[in-house]
Length: 316
Image 1: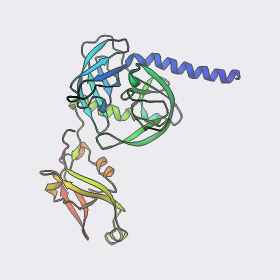
Image 2 (image 1 turned 90 degrees about the vertical axis):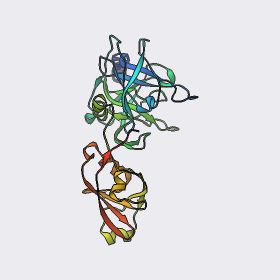
Image 3 (image 1 turned 45 degrees about the vertical axis):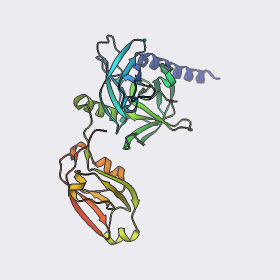
Image 4 (image 1 turned 135 degrees about the horizontal axis):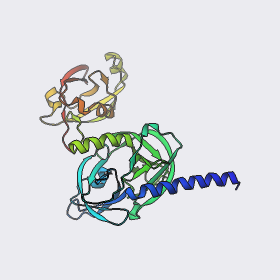
């Protein structure tokens, strides 16, 4: 090995060691109590982001639990209280009270990330506390399905090794700034790990601290993606070649009030085209709650425009 190569390896090692020392005190282990009688305890990771005890983790780590126990890197334990969660982005905020000398991690900016830059994950895989793995940002702008069924956009792909128990821990850059929240791996694959971008997390955290949940609008339909026939697309001059077939309509929902029926195929919402159910999810933001709009649907051989007023989505 040349002196130049040795110098580069030393610089890499020093960067990882420095970040591990800087961020590890902020990382916690979160153990969940029974979700229901007979269920086993679960555990995941999280990290302190305010000195007064607010922690960020994954929603799937804490969802439906009766009791949370937080273990700090120095071994101290405290009960955790769920401030709020957003299953749609798999994020949650937990609070611990009256715990002095907490070290908060610093949020970075995920819009400035570049593919190939150093990425370091810290968490508690399989209960091994404060495990550090390092890799690179493999790709940006990925999409990932949350356990609640919605698509999470702007997900970071990394090859920093993650395992069960890493969920909710921080993904940080070479300066120790949080760039993502580790959330998922693809089982039976190597080097395919994912983190929710920190800019998404910052938005969700602000809403969870304010309201305890993230407001989203809701129509009250269950649907599936379906292709449209070439004849339908040409005859109706449709801007899409697929849409969302309505499988069911919930009672007393905005969709029922709009006159939507099972079998209808949604191809537009307002001025926006709808090619699949994820297009519809992206448009149903909190700004749409109570805002009159229209649904463009293919019904049999006709295309109809139905007035609709989205409501606030019920809690998951």
